[in-house]
Image (cartoon, rainbow, N blue to C red; front, side, top):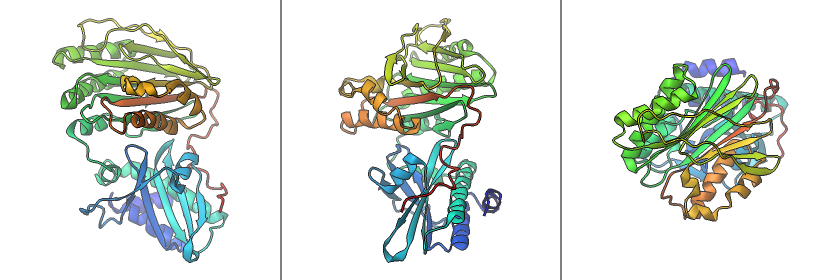
Length: 402
């Protein structure tokens, strides 16, 4: 079973039935007693088991498994498949379903015997193919959205989630980037975004004032204006000017703070714009430094505002952390944020950003008064063309402890 075979078979099925096609292939090739797909929920704190295609839209709640302390958490964190003997003589195999650092979920199999090296290669290759299948099909069905929602979203949060990039993490030879967002009960104004072009990568973090749908609509204006300018080839200054004008013209006297970043993939030159936003933090060689930029007005405060493009010193091995003010609220002040950035420095940005947000959520007793958002960017440098960008999804030959 190779990637081409798996993709071809899934493509011949409907977007909903493609999971069943892959499961059927694994059952047939490996004599598996059961094959299931578990998708990571929006918060990254649990996985949801998707059923067969004929019951994914049933009225019953999906099976949700909290991640802490589980084998699933270990596989997601390490991005290595795991093998365990279970009762009844079956062998359980759990493999990561990941593409370019975006940990979409897991595939779980129950086999009559421990798979040999070729079997492990087949499982890993199919799990990797499954990531492509999910990415290709989630534009056509709500099944994956349904599976990721372990709690209802209000209208503001629904709008907010649609403004986020389709994949919350991305691996490339030169960098790794990931973001995490925890929406508050009555706020929907935080967003983050990133894009990779031929020679640059760009990212933004924004925070719209206000509550509920008004904040979500302001965020929509800001993100839409930034993307429109960026896709037209505008530089950071022009992007900021257009976002400001969009809020001035349509924002009903609201405003949006923001930080824009652009990194050259050719020489590592890094530029950024700060529009009234909390300062970025840089982790370098085990020490965190708060970078103090020139701060311009938030978007929407005044027509014709000028925005300064500044240089940022980013070196291979650095981690840049950008956040919103929900991470700095009074109760969040109980969190030793700088120490936490250091202690999570060895984690993948995907895991680190989730850990930072989770700690702030814990400090608030599980209910935030303001959205909390973090983006982590690890810069590996421009001479890393051979670094694997699959983040473990290609570890077909990795041995798994029993």
